[in-house]
Amino acid sequence: MAEQEPELNPEAVESEATEVAEEATDTSAIDRELEIFQDLQRLQADFVNYKSRVDRDRGVERQMAVADTVKAFLPALDDLTRAEQHGDLQEGTPMAAIAQKLRSAGEKLGLVAFGEKGEKFDPELHDALIQTPNPEVTEPTIGDVVEKGYRIGERMLRPAKVAVFVPSE
Image (cartoon, rainbow, N blue to C red; front, side, top):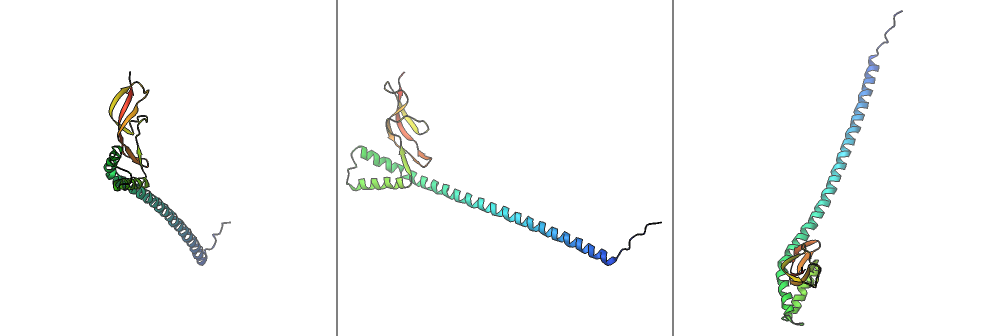
């Protein structure tokens, strides 16, 4: 006997095709929603990174502006220090008050002076203007400070200009 082909019911075929099409549509819609959600997550991460980068850059730019401004006042601070060393800046005078206010303002902005007589010489922090052999030292040592060095935070504004005692041979 020959096998009989099952009868095709056009309505059943059409309803099955509609179900398959709906499932495909549902699956593609879910995939599309997932793709959109992932795009939104990437955009949010990009925005968070951008915001933190802008905040960090803003802080760096502020620090650079403060450093540049303070750097312009360093010659005045040098003059006040020299006047004080020579006895020209008497306690209680208006100039002494101005000197104190300038130094206080610098400290508030994070200005730190370095380069003291007797310190070990560091070529990264100090400019040696003169070297003098000295039998009393075993390593290069600052013998005199011509101009103090200054920094704000980790940023050096100016190296200290010093005279150095070096070991005599």
